[in-house]
Length: 274
Image 1 (cartoon, one colour):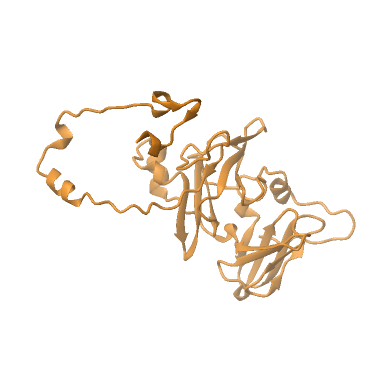
Image 2 (cartoon, one colour):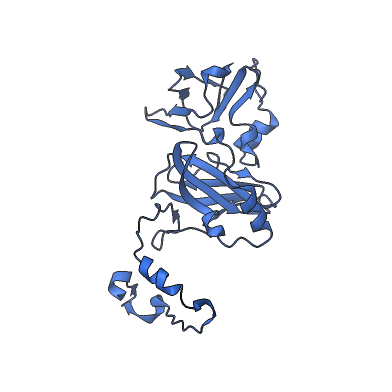
């Protein structure tokens, strides 16, 4: 990453930075995060509305770039570790601290992308969607979505004011997958995907692999906590091994609960249905 020279007079952002501001950049990691060249490191953060940005664990203050919402720091590489926390402050005095999403490498594996591209991924729901994970010792949520024709995809939610400029995702190439790991995002967070179409229209979409959703009329997906259920079917699984269950007839019964029974105009919940 080449540092931007701050000159007097009218300041104009370079095209890659302007694409971030316009929410058009397909690879925000080109501009944001930690970039090292030799013994020098350059850190750049984009935080609209912030009055100041620091790296609190290193005691470093980032400098605002012109009159923009970009903040930068440059110095010795050993001053900033590969994963660092950012603190940003607003005019009302509120402060927020979290690891920088743009200092983490990609997480969706090459095999997953290869199988998905061939239409042979049998467990793609484990890859796409929102999944609480721990990545290189930092807990957070990995978001991934397939949007092959989008110019840009962002995660929007109550964690970033539903602002598509805050968390643009990384494009993983010709397979159409976009991903971003957001550190320290808790389960229960609301989110959607904001994307820019080939025609330039900005669209807001729900997550087709969302594991949990708000109740109507609200329409956001919810980051679901990792399942805590402990299965107790070991004996049944052992007993099943003696039967050719995969090649025997089976009966499936199905009912659409929402149209089967209601309480007036309201749907019953699962406990009431039971």
